[in-house]
Length: 352
Ligand SMILES: Cc1ncc(C[n+]2csc(CCOP(=O)(O)OP(=O)(O)O)c2C)c(N)n1
Ligand SMILES: [Mg+2]
Image: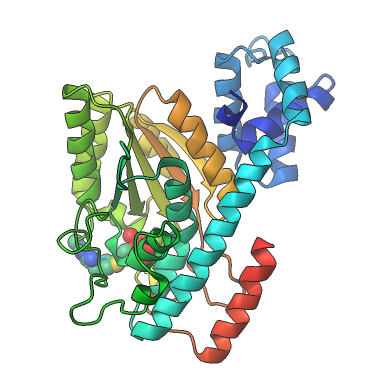
């Protein structure tokens, strides 16, 4: 039960208990400024808490202070006393640290890798495997890396899951290797769908999720997309189909790094207001910090247990994966030995 609450909801619950007489609007505005969490994310999570009967507040016409209900107070107290999720988040962080380092190693050994796009996605891929263990033996969950050029992040995560060895990672992209620069289902069964041609993954995800419904099968279907990838019209057909069929087993995750190739997504073809676009197609939208594995893991846990319609997680990321010594604006990039050493030091600093 406690696992069901994500980090934003915990923050809201604990802050309301200290709140005196503020209305929901002014309370959330202030909390957003203090925490640097987008207002829309806090609003959505507050709405969820109200649906769970944990908080009450008025309307713009009939303003009332935002308050915890009796159950809300109880849950807030239990959450304050519990540290069980923190253990889980730490596990997520450690997993991601190894993945980041192994993504860098693959870039160096192959000398031609989509390093920045992989670093951007790697906390997301690690978190997805942490929560759902998709595509692995005996797992009922399915994962499609629609932005297939982030294959190194997938391979490094599969190495953490002991599906492939860390030595094999160094064969990335070489002739005869199972680890091609875009994931290839023929060579690696844990790659559910071969990808690389952008725009197709969500349509395939809709098909698998619909198939599960028809056959009464359990499990979630998770699709990771790039933000530039959303320029493909086929993605929006899939978004409509997911909503039309009420697929409460389908989760899209958008790696929102605001970059596609070497340019800005907003200059090339504007995506904003992205949350509103997905919501207007009938999806539930959650915005997270995609470089905080704790936040991503707890959000995915929440969705796993509470999903009632298709959900999109818009994950705010950076092409350097939060590693401050690496540039954020590059598409193809291979670090020198010196840059690698510096990056590993940065990773140890972030993930310690
Ligand atoms: C159908 C298709 N068109 C073009 C490409 C070439 N391409 C590879 S990556 C990329 C940019 C993708 O940007 P985004 O989805 O934002 O991913 P990011 O690298 O930022 O993670 C493009 C256009 C492709 N792989 N597939
Ligand atoms: Mg992008």
